[in-house]
Image (cartoon, rainbow, N blue to C red; front, side, top):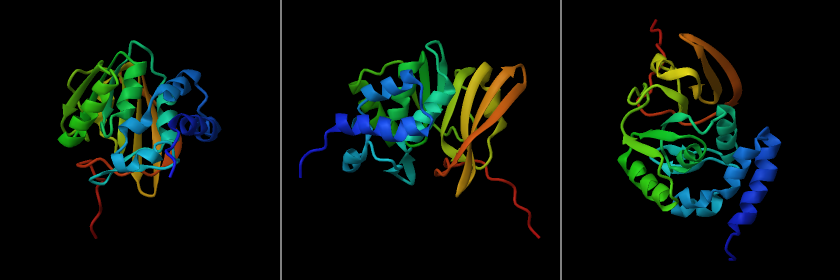
Amino acid sequence: MPSLNFDVARDSMIKSQMRTWYVHDERVLDLIARMPRQDYMPAASRNLAYVDMNIPLGHGEVMMNPKIEARLVQELEIVPTDKILEIGTGSGYMTALLANLGRHVVSVELRPEFTAEAATKLAHHGVRNITLEVGDGARGWDRQQPYDVILITGSLPILPAAFRETLAPGGRMIAIVGQSPAMEVKLIRRTNGRAFNETSLFETDLPPLRNAIEPARFVF
C-alpha cells in the first residue's frame, strides 16, 4: 500500500474540515499547515492524523478532532505575550500549537507516561517555551497563576470556580462542560475584578477528566 502523503492530507483537512467549520483566522490556519500532526499521534494511528475524528490515546483519553482543536485555538485569541495554562497534555500537539502562539505554556497531565512522551515529541520539534507538570488539574491549578489563557482539553461535568480565580483580568478560558452525549464548549472572559462573560460556542462530546467534580445527585 502506498504511503500517505501527509502534506496533501493536511492541506485537504484545512480546506474541507476547518474552513467549512468557521475557522478563518489565517494565523491559526498557517500554523496548523506547518505543524506535522502525525508526529504527535500514537504510532498505530499515524495515518489518521488528518481524519475528521477523535483519536484514542489509551486509558480512555482521546486526541480531539482536528477541526475542534483549530476552533478552540482560534476562539482563545492568543497573543505573543500570553501565559497559558493547558489542563491535559495528552499527545502534546495542542501544547505545541499554544506554545507557537503564546509566550509560555504550563501544561498539566495526570498520566506521567503521557507527559514523558509529549516531552520527547515537543523537544524534537524545538518547542521550548513550555513547562510540563505531572499532576491532577481537574479541579484547578494555581501554580504560576494568573494565566492569560486557560484551555481545559477534557470535559468537566461542573466547572470548578478555582479556574476562574486563576484567570487574569482580560483573560480567556475554554472549558467543555456537561455530560455525554451533549456538552457545551464555553468561552469565559474575565472582564475585570470578579466580573466574567460567558459564551456558549457549540456542542461536542469528549471523555471527562479523571477526578472531575461530579454534580450532586438527589436521593429519594
